[in-house]
Image (tube, helix red, strand yellow):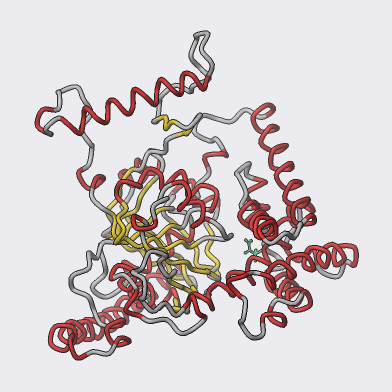
Length: 491
Ligand SMILES: CC(C)(CO)C(=O)C(=O)O
């Protein structure tokens, strides 16, 4: 009976979607017509929203955790959907995909909606040891049975790798020997123009290192994750030359999506859209624009849309087109302020819930914890109000006052009182936390301005210490069934 009702629900939803699809297709045709016939006469804002037939439409999604699934599922639900490639980081996931129905299922308001038509690519993770990438199955630099030290072995491996890559690039492709593994999938070598990253901040650098050769200065990377400072890390380690950097977009997600553990074991491509929220999106202005290009953000003025790369406009437009995502674009300066507010909330709720090993609501109505929160927020407020990028903005002192930040923390703790914070979930699962991109970011920004963020620093160290205790316990005391390593948990 229940299944019947659910099926009826799906059918009703499908026919409603069909009608909507037709309407949107007409709308799309109109937009292409507009872009072909009137492009020259459009205003800058008009060009921003017009369809762009020349931009490659494929969207790659890195991270198939709950948010990755929500975004992928929503994009394939669009009328005239873009091609979507899921970048899978584990063989087990690829096998599950191939053995399954090759669809993502989202349970929303009691109705299961299945969507297919995705492409997948396996992105085997490499380990980095002493500065060299070790491929899947390659021995650790610590395992060699010689007198040589791990860093010396790493040096030899690096030399070998660079020689191999030089030889390979000098040989014509048809001269590859039989036994040499050819790239398994030609698509895996193609450029990535539009990339959405839903990985956690600490794993982003190592994952993007694998994709570095496929990312062009014309590509756009949209980061949908907690924490701040990832872009600085990417620029330092992967894109030191500003002219070779991709374009960046950032987003703040308030959707609540989860994967019931019982379901995760049966179908890793299943998720529940439990709380409908929004995505605030903002593009980052490039640092390498020709001198003289008007850059509104730098002066705290409205943005000049002409400076955004076509892939950035395409990705922004595509994400904002998906009704369920409720994505809205903001100016870089407004998005930055929203990110900092979220950072302040996370910098209190996440580490405190880890230390207390308790749900978000546990910090409420407890004066000892209120004192701790106030100490943290006094320090964070001072640092945020001193940031050079916010200088000259009116209202900064009020928006980032310790009292207002406390109101934000309390209200989020109330709204999510039964939730387990993402940081506590990470610690419990033995995963690396985002603390260095939350409290660590506040500490780093403080240091730049000569402000010692001792409370944030101390709390970050305790969270790191707690994570280490958990990881050690897991390694030493508990034996896991093969294939059930909790550290391999999905991102
Ligand atoms: C706001 C909060 C704490 C909600 O759980 C969160 O964003 C998180 O868990 O990372």
